[in-house]
Length: 400
Ligand SMILES: *Cc1c(COP(=O)(O)O)cnc(C)c1O
Image 1 (cartoon, protein in one colour):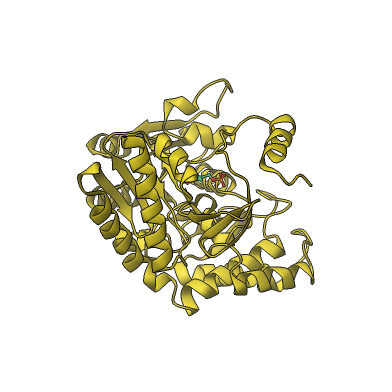
Image 2 (tube, helix red, strand yellow; image 1 turned 90 degrees about the horizontal axis):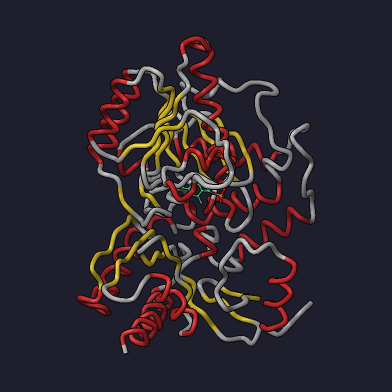
């Protein structure tokens, strides 16, 4: 394997498709919320692999559970039963109050499953002739990169090149207009939305709006779907962000943080939708992979039994306070819930700050104009302090 940064980068550039704008750093190791490059330089991780490594790097319990499963049975397909996958399904249902689960490998796949459920629910109940197959999503949303989940994503920038997209998606701003459409368009079978629009810039949806969407969806028998791919699994301070909104969706999708860094996605169904998909309606070769499920079980154990979830709100509030104290009026706004934060800085762009962050030993994400923080949920207070102090150096270097 290559071991200098220049070698790694040039190998990557030649042999990996150029679909990502990478930062000029290669990570080769880590512990908790501290990552190391090939020379051993440290970086505070405020991004956790885009919200996936919820327990940080090398969490002891997670690593032990994953290695044990890899040494026992890595994958057997969905033709057979196995106790790890069904245990995870039961635990997810117990903690969310949902009835059953479909396992895939990513957020986009979880949303594909949700979309199929909404369409089939309506098809079976109202017939194809009803034309009741449209799905309402929100402007500025993000639901994935497959052709259908791109179609579901309510941002025009994603609707390029790959025509024709899957039909039947309509977008509206998260306000009265969306409510009017839901009330009046009889061709709508489902509504899909994030509660905090992550990729869209970390915008928290208004509680009253979300409650009204749920109410109309109930009245009109519209399948109410919440995309918790980014907000789920403790990220916002509760296991699901839904809990803070007091809502009970028909379908909830999870992915990012669920596997603690391993690929897994899940569509969880409530009473109304849990029997919609039957034998051979849907499937995934890798879905429910035992190693990913063992990782997810370890994530649940750490969050729920070891008390990590209980600290998320407090740590999130601490990060906000520390940012305000450190940056003062250089910050225009901080948005978000729990440890999912978006910061609008006055001056340099989010991209410039992220690049300067790497030069100063801190990894942050961006979401449009916002600097986005999704730190590992296990981050320590001293790692937070060190990360914010490095971020200050980064921002100061741009303001010179
Ligand atoms: C990241 C994300 C997705 C897509 O997940 P992938 O695992 O990349 O397919 C879907 N919805 C939301 C809200 C996301 O943040």
